[in-house]
Image (tube, rainbow, N blue to C red):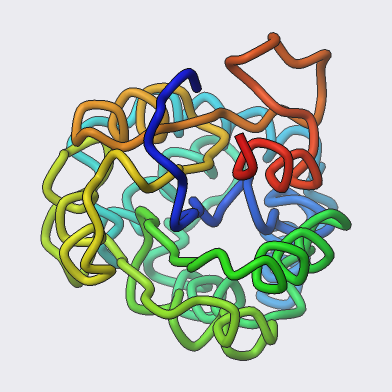
Length: 225
C-alpha cells in the first residue's frame, strides 16, 4: 500500500467481500432439495462437499452449465437423481434472490463513508447474469458507478482484462484505484497484475498488517494515505 499516487476509486469483489450465502450454501441447497422430495439432507455435509467441489473446479466461467456441473459434484452420493434433472433450475433462481444472501454488517456503513469523502466506487466480480439484478434488489447497486461482471466482460479475475476494463470505464489510471476482495489470487494478485493497488479482506482471522484488513471500515484511512 506504499504508493505516492492518491487513491481516487475503490473497486470491490462481491461474494465473500460484500455478501455471503445465507444461512449457508448447504442450508439453501437442502431447503430446495427438500421441496423436491429429497429430505433430511445435512447442510453441513452439503457445505463440506460444496467446498471440496469448489476447490477442485477448473476452467469455471460462472455459466449456468458450470453451476449445474458443480452442483452435480456437490450432491454426488446424496441424491438418486441428478439435480440437473430435478431441482437445479429452482436452485439457480434461488441464488438470484436477495433472501439467499446476507450483506456483511460493515458494507453499507463503509460505502456511505467512502461516498461521503468523494471516493468513486465500482464492482469487479466473477459472477453471472444474476448479479446486476441481485445487487439492485439488495439496494447496493446505487453505490457503484459501474459494475463489471465476468460473464459480460468475457474474462474472469485474475485476468488483467476485467481490471483494465474497469479502469477504462472509470477513466482513471490503474495505480489510482484500490481493489478490495477476499481471494488473494483472484483479487489481490489479479488487481496488482493490472497495475491496481489491492488489499485482501479477512473477517475471520487476525489480518496481516499492510496486506489484509479485517473490516471495510478500515478503507477510509487507507484511502486517506
